[in-house]
Image (cartoon, rainbow, N blue to C red; front, side, top):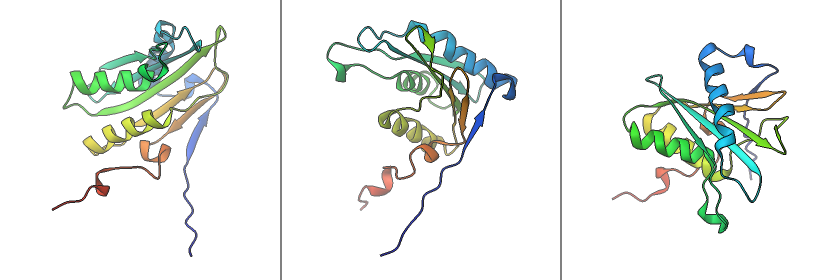
Length: 162
């Protein structure tokens, strides 16, 4: 037996002003769109903003359904739209925020596993890291790439090749 340690490094920020102007705009886009979420059941509104390499910002919100598995997370809504409308443009960054109980979440909230896989797949597709910014009301987290969110990820290396 051998022990393998997996280490993930994240960066915490206390204010929006610590980010570049470009990332401040991205975070604000996620915060602005969050109230458009359709979350009548959970009241857990999520907003996501994707920054493409060409400077375009794509936003998305979570979309719930009474049959819960039929809904979709904000991160995937934004990532799928970006990949669909700009299939040859890499994603540079993704900002995510949560609004619940009439206020933004105090702490950053990370994406679910399915969203992590979608972000990672986009990262691998373009062979370029995607920076992920999780925005809380009092704290922000920056993760340098999707592999850091999902270190034991599933990818095409597991498919048998002939």
